[in-house]
Length: 69
Image 1 (cartoon, rainbow, N blue to C red):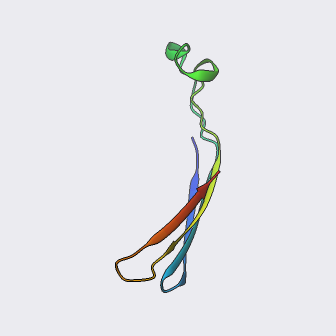
Image 2: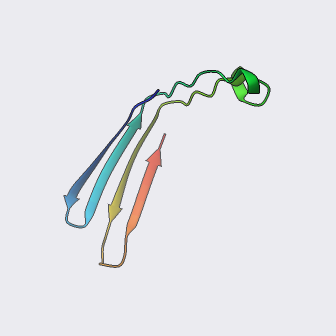
């Protein structure tokens, strides 16, 4: 179980800014694969956050940058 939210904003006609966040995702323990999966079979995923932008200086060009933690 987990939740992911995202937001996209068109700041200018050629500039988009976005952000995303995700809560920790809890997954039940995989007892059968305890020796293969780290943390004694716990497959849960940590929370993450990200921001980015896309800039279109010309019709056929797009520059983008994303940073995630």
